[in-house]
Image (cartoon, rainbow, N blue to C red; front, side, top):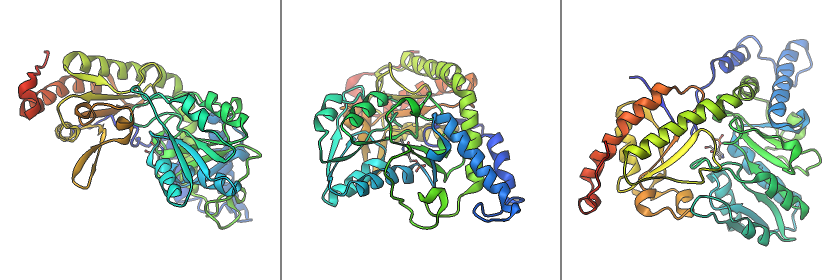
Length: 392
Ligand code: PLP
């Protein structure tokens, strides 16, 4: 079956050029980059080449790039290093719509006696900046706000927030896992202290991440061990994946324009055609400030999981805005924070595109999804009274 992959915020296809870049580091070049002899020099050189490619995509310098194992490790490290650097401060600020890598770290710290402020969002997923600024205090160790939301694609005004936070002398971290490679980022023109990346979200391999750490930021390693990564992360570097991530960053810079024109146009066509053909459907999130590849659409009176299963039969991959927890279908914390009504939150589907998607992919979804929603609504007890009809 032909797969139509529209779940690129979950993970992406490894670019063929990335795989090619990685392969020699599984076979010919297996030296430990910390070893002294010339044979290992090849791997050490590749490591530094990749570091400089990552730095270049971010507008950072190479010394500010720390390789980690994933976005989650980068997020955890940023928060932990800030609280260890500020042992007297017992308050952290984050948002209600963070990825679990930040959200659950906050909950963990709350259980350890920290006061955690979660900034609310409005119905379009936009942050309440006044609430954030009002809660900054002398006791705040770190503010962590994602650059773009993984479910809705809503982009937050990170440059503005970072500046306001830095003016108070507080450490600022951003989880930019979904933003890097999709929108231009230049840390040198911001006050961001730390920023997280994950390789598998930008056509790199899984199991590799980066934490950007601005020069001069106090830092305590999360992984305590050898002197690797300038003493900031113990453990022999994952050279093959790092080489792949370097290549992925180079490609992301080259594809940035396509992402923001062709991919965005595909997303917009998908969205407008679905809204035209399916009644009682609505976009979740601020359409004026969104990643170019993402749309989250709420279809009233159907369950997201049922839609996913029926699309799965046709080889269409997307994800829902619900998480199946302990037998009950709980709408996602992001949609709940936005106050999306129960009926739409349950039937929300996220489509996330990439440069590998084609017009044909979009044609198939536009043709196949409306009858799926119609069928599910016909089976739904909510619809008998609602008399919902598909516009053909
Ligand atoms: N942060 C965001 C916004 C994400 O979307 C993800 C992955 O979905 C992560 C962090 C975690 O990244 P990783 O899977 O590399 O740990």
